[in-house]
Each structure stands twice: as structure tokens, then as C-alpha cells.
Image (cartoon, rainbow, N blue to C red; front, side):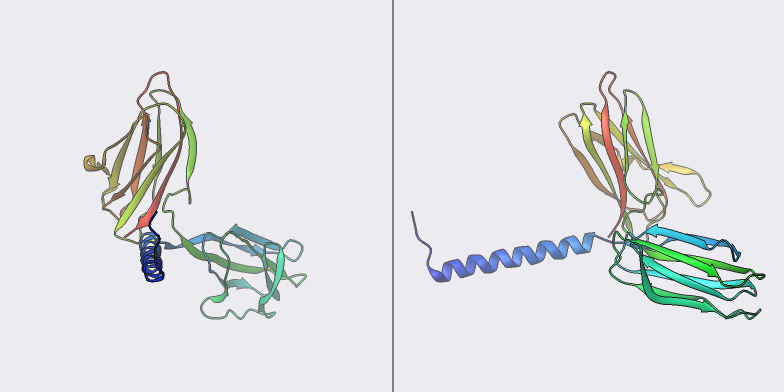
Length: 246
């Protein structure tokens, strides 16, 4: 067996490092995300019943935007990350004064964590009305906010819908998670007049021996993606998703 010298080992190590950096860069270029409103709510808060709004973040940073719309109550807005109260608060004084614009609070390192906003009316007789948004980012542009799982028996369909992508393209991913059925994938694009146009150039077939179809649709418009089990006696257990893509 030939023994490598020190110089050869160093050259191989450099090549491996370059390949790793390139693959990481390529992944980052493909892994796009779109700004999205994770949760929104408006309402009126009474002293005996604080308002609570919560959601799980799909991005690293979350910004809460809130504005007072009416009322006289002195009010405090508290924030909780995975149940832990944060030092940041929003306070509104007693009276009819309405601050101009939105008040914001931003929280980092939020991916996968729950954020809860609790609006506490500290008056007895007065109310507090508000509008609130919890904003972040999301890779998935599926209208469900993420992957859709299910099981199709023979000759049945499943259709998912997407929001418009903030990037030029939309990546469609269909995974087989079980079953032996053969399946067809069809894509439609929503026109400006509200009708749907089928994009036959993106027709795909998930053969019995294949576990995934992953392809890019050259469109930033709303799409609908149909998965059809074309078998008669076999089933397919699936996961479908759509991602923002360069």
C-alpha cells in the first residue's frame, strides 16, 4: 500500500475543506425564506380577562408589532418565550391618547420556540382595543405553513396550495413515507384573473421504486400541487411541501 507524505495529506485536507465550504454555500443559496406574519389578532381587552396570543416561531428572529386603536385603560403587554417571561414590555398609560404608528419588540434565537403575548388591562372600568402582529420568516410557502402528511388509497388525490413566493421560483418536494403505489404529480399556476393554468412541463411520476421527487417550478405565483395515486390496490403514504427557492 502506498503511503501518503505530509504534503499530499495537507493537499487532500485543503480540497476536502473547499468542497465542504462550497456545499455549505450552495445549501445556503438554496435555503431561502420569506417574510411572513405568523399570527395576527385584533380585539378589546377587559380588566377581568387578559388577551393571550401565541405561536411557534419558524425563524430565528421574531418581531411583535402592536398598536392601540381605542380605549382608556392603563395596559401592560408582557412577552413569554417558551413560558419564560421576558424583561421587555410595552406599556400604555391611562387615557384616550393613542401613540402614532406601531410599537415593536424584537426577539432573537427564536427558531422552534413558542412566543406568547399577554395583554393585561390594569384598569377596572375602562377597556383597551388593539391590533397585533407576530412577524417572522418561513421557508415553506405552503398555505398550511409547512409539510402536509397523509395516506392515499388507489385512484385518489391530495392537493396542496401555496402562497406566492418572495423568490423567483418555488421548490416542490414530495416524499414517499410508505406504500408501494405509483403516483403522478401535477402543478397548476394561479392567473391574475383567479383561474388556474396547468403547467404540464412540470408533470412528474413517482415510480414504485422512488422515494422522492424534488423539482423547481419557475413561478413566484400561487400554485396548487396535486398528488394522485394511480395504482388500484396499493397505497402511498406521503409528505408534500413547497419551499421558496432561487
